Amino acid sequence: MRSMKWIPSRFNAISQTERGELILYNSYTGAIGVVTEEEKKTVLQALKRSGIDRDLLPIEKTLAECGFLVSQQVNEEKRAQFLHQTLHRTDTMHLIVLPTEACNFRCTYCYQDFSRGNMSRDVVNGLKHFFENKIPRLEHLTVSWFGGEPLLALDIIEELSETIVEWTDRHDVTYQAEMSTNGYYLSKETLQTLLKYKVNRFMVTLDGSKDVHDSRRALTNRGPTYETILNHLKDIQTLNDSFEIYLRINFDEDNLSHIPHFLEELACYFAGDPRFQIFCRPVGKWGGANDEGLPICDNRTAETKIWEFTEFGINRGLNMSSIIESMLMPTGAVCYAAKPHSFVIGADGQVYKCTCFLQEEYNHVGRLHADGTMDVDFDKLALWVTSGEEQDEHCQACFFRPACQGNHCPLYRIRKGKRPCPYEKRKIKQVLRLLHAQQSETK
Image (cartoon, rainbow, N blue to C red; front, side):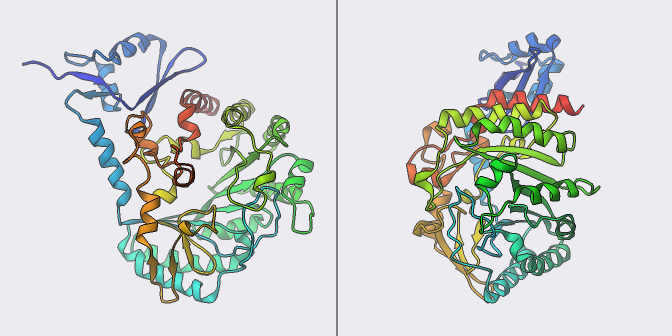
């Protein structure tokens, strides 16, 4: 009987370590593997387009199990289409909740206008009713606390979290929560309070050492913020609890040259502690009053510096954000705004799809009412959730399709009419090398 023919997956990417070992990645299975020097020749031969028309060797069987080799009968395009349909599951939900839209900072590149303060009582009650109605029908719930500065409304976060934890526990629904905060009020005691409510991932922004950071991310009265944030983080580090704090470093032409020095400073405090992880990203124009005057980097510089800074940090013992590896997983690089069951709840009950360009009418997709019902404009919703790979032949042919599905940033596609390819895809070989380098550092 003729054996099955095996061919390389269309979703493979290959990189090399500094020592010449192969790093294999498949975006459909999420598999990432390292091939030793001894196995390298056999593996490269197995991954030739001509395929394998015989029984597989042991190492080739491993390649097949990980998805790097697939049967010639497999229709990988259909597999990717089916994976896309999993985004439409109705038993999972992600809400980004703005307990306040006020902020104690006035960052130079911020796009928000702070016209609304704390969440009204009607909206708080509406959310509690919404959770009570929705949670029994879910398998999984994720809540992201956002703002403004969410910790200005810690009492509202606690009140809502009481309801969420009670109902998810009662109905055996898995629940995870995260927070984007400027860190000014993230004391050790506050973090411990949030951990009780299962908030265990935090994004805290530091744009440089004291003078640089304070010139970009000052209080409303222009007062300094750096030392307060750093002291909180160092205090938090003394805890034995499990959590992740992503140290986001926003860069533009103004602070670009300072970042390497700042990474060395961060390494003095957080090197070797995997709970503190760096996440470097370029400043963008996201619809605020400051957009025209922002000294943003050009695309080539931005793409280069993200990974240059990340590598610099890894080499000094800092951990790269786990966000990066999660982006490489199936559907991992699809933006929340492109997912049908992900919504942003404003402090006044306005429902959005995206946390940027909040004034744009196409981003106003619904409203939450005091009784817990949510009105949704499905025509506007469709603009966000059907703007990707369905219409884009380039996305359909891309090796990264299962991970981002043409919807890494639906807002970019809506506004620009162009493909929003993620930074990770464009520099995939370098990203794979950095993942391997980090794993080598932690062994």
